[in-house]
Each structure stands twice: as C-alpha cells, then as structure tokens.
Length: 68
Figure 1: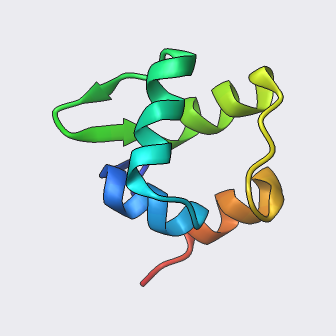
Figure 2: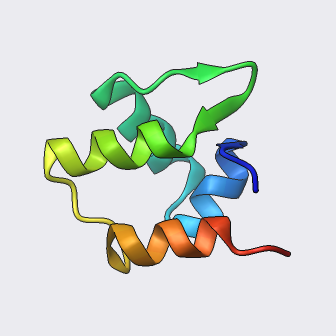
C-alpha cells in the first residue's frame, strides 16, 4: 500500500480541494517531496494540530490504504 500520495490522491481521499490540502500542508509544515505527501506524517500533523478532517482520521486512514 502506498504511503506517499500525490496531492490529488490525498485530497480526493479526504474530500477536500487540492488547494485546501496544500494550504494545510504549508500551515502545518508537512513537506511535499518530489510531488508526494507522506500520508502518515500528514495525518499525524493534522491530529496534533487539532484539525478535524471529514470522516475522522481512522476512517480516512482506512480509505487511503484500501486497495484499488
């Protein structure tokens, strides 16, 4: 399963716009390295900052890890 996702893949899984995702990454210091975002680092950063994501972190983590 992929842990490093493109901004488009992660924003689609989150149900937010790519622009909002990139703003959150910049705000919380989550790096975008070679056009990919570390899903685990992103989720941990959002949790630590107290951001509420659609569906909650566990559901999002399961959705991103789901094959297909």
